[in-house]
Length: 67
Image 1: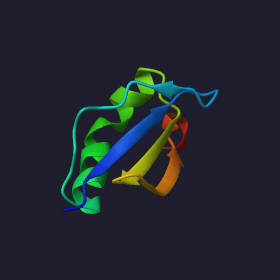
Image 2: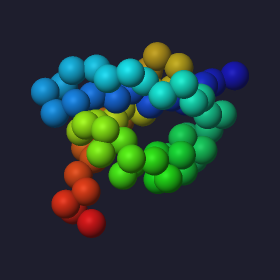
Image 3: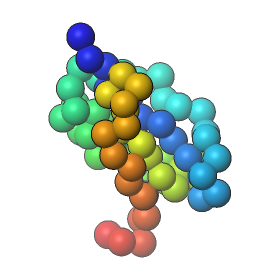
Image 4: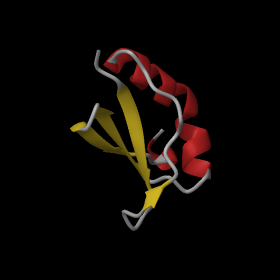
């Protein structure tokens, strides 16, 4: 079974503590991010990386100014 997780990075690309949440599908992971991105951005997260197990699916910037 594949597990989807998020890796969090600050504006300089330094890792921040990753959320403990794991997801059973990409859609579940993306829904979770949809609910949490503002909070993560306020905590200094600038970039999120979606991982399927250890494989990078994609990287995405969090920028509240682009609403």
